[in-house]
Amino acid sequence: VEGGGSGRKAKRARRESAPPKEKGSTGRSSKREAKAKVVEAGTAAGLARLRYDWPIGLKVEALQEDQNHFGAWFTATVIGHQHPDKVQVEYDELLEDESPDEGDEDAIPQLKAAVPVRNMRPLPPPKVDGWVNRVGIDDVVQLDYIGGWWNVKVLEIAEGTYTVISLDFDAKHTVGEDLLRPLPAWYWDIGQKQWLIKGYEEELEEALEEARKVANVDSMVL
Image (cartoon, rainbow, N blue to C red):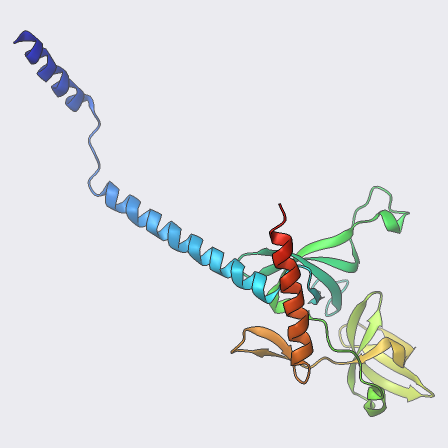
């Protein structure tokens, strides 16, 4: 009997010493967990879309917004993705600002950066022969300068050379047609959710699919 009584007292003591439970805490915890799962699923879906639209290894052009290169498009390679709307790239021509040996350009690493998808596009199609014959005064074309493509306006045409002025800087250049290209005509296809070039859809889709295949194979390598 005494043993039983001691047991009842011990149980009462444990109950009395235990902290009171907050009302509704279990419900709030479940809601938080459910919300976290929804966010996690949304993040996974967003990353999957980024990987599909911009597969690793795809060559792209990225629009610059810093004051030194504002408005220029530089070629880069997709190396990663950042939810919700950025793609990590490694530039072909842009280099990191700091280097242990600034005198040796080959030792300076290529710039890596996260670029918003709104500032990215696939590589444009190759130039069509004779395109420059249709260029006139005040037309806007693009100039190949220090590794990037810059929007410029044609001021003068003389003996196979073109004098152009930057749309964003007070800088003039006189160059041959080999350093110019037509202004790429891009549009966003709402149905397919990817960049397309009018008249160049098949070639671009082939490039995207090839990059996706390579990216999928690389992702399976441990």
